[in-house]
Amino acid sequence: MEKIRFGIIGCGGMATNAHVVGFNKIADKCQVTATCDIEEDRAKNTAELLGAQFYTTDYKQVAEHVDAVLIALPHDLHHEVGMFFLSKGVHVLMEKPLCNTERECLDVIEEAEKRDLTLMCAYPVPFHDWVVKLKELIDSGEYGEIFQMSIWTEQYTDCETFPWAKSAKRLGGGQLFSHGCHYIDLLLRFLGKPVSGTHFGTNKGTPWMEKEGNSNVVMKFENGAMGYHFGTWGARGSSHGYDFQIFTDKGFFEYNKEKDTIIWKCDWDPNAKGPKIIEWKFDDNSKQTQNEIEYFIDCIREHRKPMTDGRSALEGLRVIWKLYEAEENNTIADLRGLGF
Ligand SMILES: NC(=O)c1ccc[n+]([C@@H]2O[C@H](COP(=O)([O-])OP(=O)(O)OC[C@H]3O[C@@H](n4cnc5c(N)ncnc54)[C@H](O)[C@@H]3O)[C@@H](O)[C@H]2O)c1
View 1: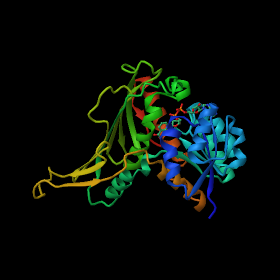
View 2: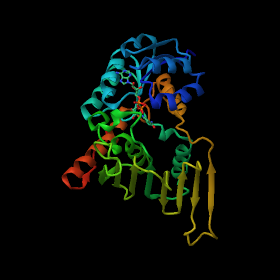
View 3: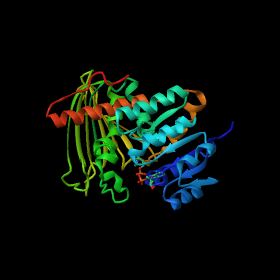
View 4: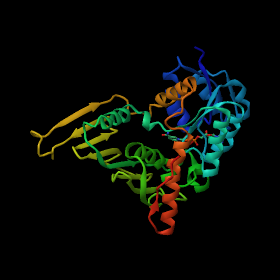
């Protein structure tokens, strides 16, 4: 089978730190044939790392060399560049968040549908091996029903290496929009349809951010479960780091990124004979972008709708926009009916 020819548009931090590793791991399935960055040395360097024959500073030159592109650009460019490639018949794997407004998201979704092309939002988390395992364990029904899911992502991100992220207009919002979108997406995947929620964000501790650098979300879901995400870009130290906890009516799951381990505990179960602890250990706590790229390729080949397609990505962003709006109006966000 012919390899899918990929272009990478935007060879900054995400492309070089994560996607280069991912593409190299699945070199039997695809070939990066073109790279682009307005900084020529970045395009050249990424081309060399992936054996691409062509590099350029003008993204419009890439279309003729590729079947698909990964767009890893500042958020305010996602729409323009996404629309260009879709209009040229190129499949698009778009870094998150899909686009900065509802209209922009709908434009790329409708263009992809009109042209029968694959459009996928590059959320890597649902494809991480531990998330796949956790979902499988929950879906088995053996570990009970979730009533609370709590996620902490505590980082220090001062935007020195990507200064465009300080601007609310370029980023499309603050920490919640740019980073929290991963975990709103995840909460929706695990907990279903949200009904209401609140968000508080400030930039105290992250004064470089125009909008919030600290973000605190609580949501209630149709099935009565609660979801929580606390994210900060101002953590000068942290004990949580990345920590995911799920409480079910039978026990408790925790994934800790540093240990790359899921732990199950049901030590409060009155019927259990002594504490019960199970551990699932993984061996790669990197971004594992090869999983999402490989899945995107399979969707193109098998003509399948990706799990993180444009419409599901837009649903998560609608939740975020509603949370921002309610925060501004000092009300509780009504999150019903935002999906497709
Ligand atoms: N999935 C994740 O975990 C994750 C993590 C970080 C970033 N991201 C996403 O990746 C994308 C890029 O973020 P980043 O951190 O790599 O930013 P970055 O600033 O490091 O990289 C962006 C690159 O785009 C280039 N660029 C800007 N305008 C251009 C244009 N018109 N044509 C070609 N190149 C242009 C810049 O020179 C830069 O090299 C964003 O969507 C971001 O949200 C995802």
